[in-house]
Image (cartoon, rainbow over all chains, first blue to last red; front, side, top):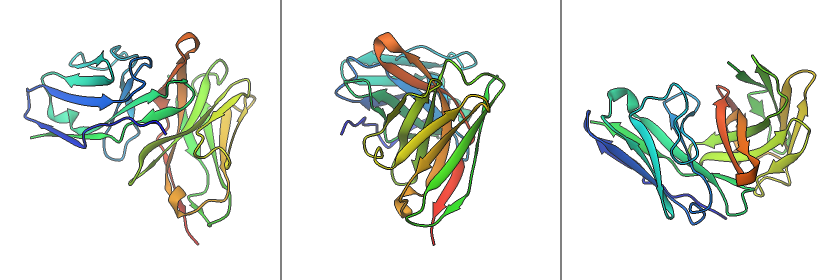
Length: 108
Length: 122
């Protein structure tokens, strides 16, 4: 079955840049999406179609894609950005949706 | 602003059928796909399946034999049934609105319900 691989954790100090990666064989041909989830809350979409930002999401959130890896970048990290982040994409056929295992972002 | 709310029993016995309903408010259920997603501590987020307002469905192959998603456009609701449940089906179940680009065969989840915990136990 198709898998998306994320690092379990990333730590950064306030004001620094956090980069969270997501790897998958089908990513060169499938868009990726990123969700932020805080404890006890539902996930919130922060990036769609690799690099587009929904309305209401701060500009410090950005996304990029290169080959089999997509990256969520948070510039000037704030304490409120501490959360779990999940990538999502589809298999090469586009019929099965898959989530990465999630990355816990810790703001030191 | 569309809102989604899950409802249903929080406790289901092993081997029985889990049934949940998602009520959509603040917008029409038509012209969109709608999805169920669950989250377990051990496996993270897992896509269960989605349904188009017309009734066409697509399920995760790992659950396909046990899942049925249906829609009632007159009530602005869609539902999940998961049969023959075991403890491994204990999870927080989310309903979500699906956005898609047919030409790119891509889907994403732009609006989520708050989630409901379903525990499978006797």
